Length: 376
Image 1 (cartoon, rainbow, N blue to C red):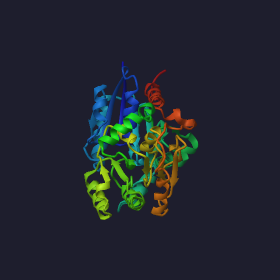
Image 2 (cartoon, rainbow, N blue to C red; image 1 turned 45 degrees about the horizontal axis):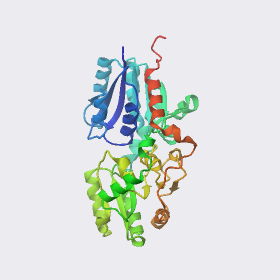
Image 3 (cartoon, rainbow, N blue to C red; image 1 turned 180 degrees about the horizontal axis):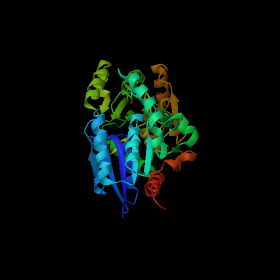
Image 4 (cartoon, rainbow, N blue to C red; image 1 turned 90 degrees about the vertical axis):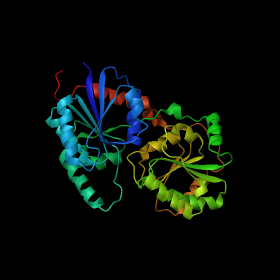
């Protein structure tokens, strides 16, 4: 009989969490598993079709993350009906640990809580959300049978401190198909020609257009850099129509709209990285950003904020800067790479930890292990 696996996400779209899950499942033998992805909201995603082709089923809850009571009720009904062996929760705030409590009450033996972030974006209700997060991690961490995190910072943000001291957590690298992202000079020239970027100094960024990813700051930095480097272009890969309009207005205010490329959502990130000369990632906070890992795998120098955990450094070509530094300091850091030649990635010791095969193996072993309520 197949093991029944429930992978839970609050939202399924085209972000880093979805990429990690899709990559791991795509490199896993699913013949002995029946896998469902349950999400409060299913949005547009480049990662859905590949998984459906492998037999993974997608089950929506209410369609909104705000309908918390309805989502809990629907999740409870799904667990009663499906009788899963494993629940793998991919979460970015501790209130989602309540799903582990539901699963515990309904006898799901393996309940993995996988922390993916180290903070919450600014909003008028941020103080209340942080209070709920603190209360939830203290109350609900105990219902998870395994604590996973993509960084020490994310573990501390999502899980109860006492539980971490007593039980610890397992570091789960965000797996990447390292070979697929490897530097390819032929692809570089092809993509640069396709985008009209021959002879340009291309500053790149990949991520959702949102406050957390902080592309507004990047445009401000680019305005400084563009004065020194007339051949520079900013290539933004990611989607959000409302945020795009805001960022377009900001670029236009600097007179730079014709030098900022809004590429949009894409399933060809590995190719687009080839076209770049330097990757800039000024996020306000991250659990462990997948994009800078992919950028390093492609041999790109990476300039990122100190909101990114240090576990992200898989090569020697990454540097961290405070968002409190002057824009000119960020521009200086980027300009250092203007004349640099692209090269193959210079990995450090933990490179293999981030290979998707390693992540897939961790997932598979957890999915096929017996839990506390099962007989040996």
